[in-house]
Amino acid sequence: MVDAGWQYFVALPDDEGAAAAIGRLPTDGVRILLRHRSGRPCVAGRLAEGRALVAERGDTRLAVIGHCSATPDELAAAAARVDEVTDLDRLGLAWAGSYHLVASVRSRLRVQGTASGLRRIFHGRLGALTVAADRADVLAAVLDAALDPALLALRTLDALPHPLGDLPPWREVSAVPPGSYLTLPADGRRPRITRWWQAPEPVRSLAEGGRLLRRALDDAVRVRADGGEPVSADLSGGMDSTSVALLAARYRPSLTTFTMENDDQADEDVEWARQAAAGLPDLNHIVYSNRELPPFFGGLMGLDGVPDEPSIALLSGPRLRAIRQRAVAHGSRLHLDGLGGDQLLRGHPAYQHDLLRHRPLLAAQRLRVLTQLRRSSLGVEARGLLDGRSYRRWFADRAHGRVRRAPNPLSDWGHFPRLPGWLTPDARDLVARTLREAAATVEPLAPTRGRHNDLLAIHDAGRLVRQCHQLTETQDFSHTSPFLDDQVIEACLAVRPEERVTPWEFKPLIKAAMADVMPPGVLTRRNKGDGTTLVAEGFEEHRRELAELWDGSRLAALGLIDPGPLRELFDRSYTDSLHQGAMQSALSCELWARATAPRPAAATHP
Image 1 (tube, rainbow, N blue to C red):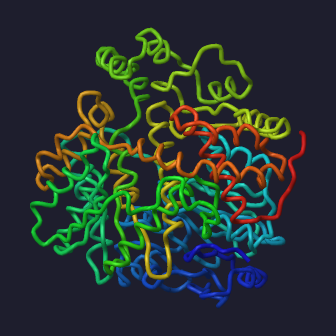
Image 2: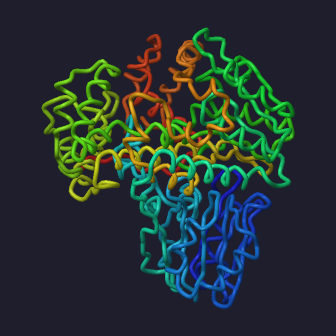
Image 3: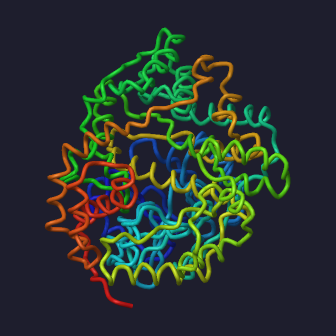
């Protein structure tokens, strides 16, 4: 049995053999949440109270799982209007919040998550039947799935291009892409994946987009805060968490907010947070020292309750749980944060590549500013902007080693990983073969580089934030991130990119959305603390015990890494170039593999 955190569910086809999957779930707290009209289980799992709403009308059964603004009457009315699974396309954005949508319509099953990937769906075959789940590790346990060495080796790299980041590390487990849904007939065979969400056309002005974002973000916060559940919120001093906290305080005037004070002299977060809190006299604003949390890289040995996939979120696990403990001590059951805001509001500089093709004079003007800000060469940046290769060609050139010049992150299709020196020869061959095979069929998330990179950043954020949430959720507590709600994403992506992403102003869209409630000083802020000093201190304090981790490495036992080069990294003082990226991915993957103790499948040479 898998230790799957606290919340999860499986969705089952309307076949008598599907119920066998329920017997493979952890038994503690499992219940049937929804049944097909036949009476057979449709959705089963373990969810906190109030996290699922169901409705039954005729041949249709509907369930929304998560935070959703729909009332029981609204869900019942929606169920009454559904005759085919395709009728549910309009419901993904019908209500505010972040939720899974599961439906049984005339014994046909439909299961979907969110456009951001914050709520995922995985599927695989149990005998002849296809079973779905919202956690990859739950499904792997149900299917008795073995790890895929190639996909596990990929997770030790610093970043993965689309679609490799979506691939779970088990051989029999597949993922439904964000913005798509899974359908199954009653016999549980022939699964079908269909896209239900497309990014909106970016045609709205900044002013109009600000109004849309304000309404969407306010609705997203209200879904969480306007109820009986005790809530708290981050108030970091940055624009994103401050926006969420100020909106939440409208529904909860005595809202408890938390600001972490950093003793780094260059970090001004706490002063900005106090300025934001000053206008809310009923706010319970708690400032605490960063030193009250576990240090970075501390408390990682023996970490349990890990996410369902390898993730660098694991490295923040002890700190996230200390934050949870603080919130719970003040009576909170739901903690709001501003995660995901950076990816939506800052945008990606590859939009200059798009801009060059329809507003070349503006693109040229911005190019000069960007090269100065980035301290890069005008010629290098211009060459990247003129590159017209397709995504498949770009991917294939890198997968086959046909790159003569250094990549250009300003205008590339994305980041392509380098293979670190600690991969074994077999693992390098597995990874290289996987990259080459993927290159033959890859498609971008959008036709242009800017929009593709925006969507990729949103998906990466959805995945990482989801795994952070998994590290802290219990029966009585969970984190939530309103910026990753689909309606909020829609509002942001509908704005013309040249207005949403500009080198002359920091996050202009959230300023337009929150101008009437955000303190003027916060609106003009252009810097943010990054915590690099604290990361370096934590690494120095714990690097020796983490170096010993590689002496009994599980990844080495699987034939994927040579522990020597990794052990040597922990003998060196912290630097961003050496100890971010792939090193942290490899450490996270090692910790995850130890905690899950999955059935190994040794690496084999292709």
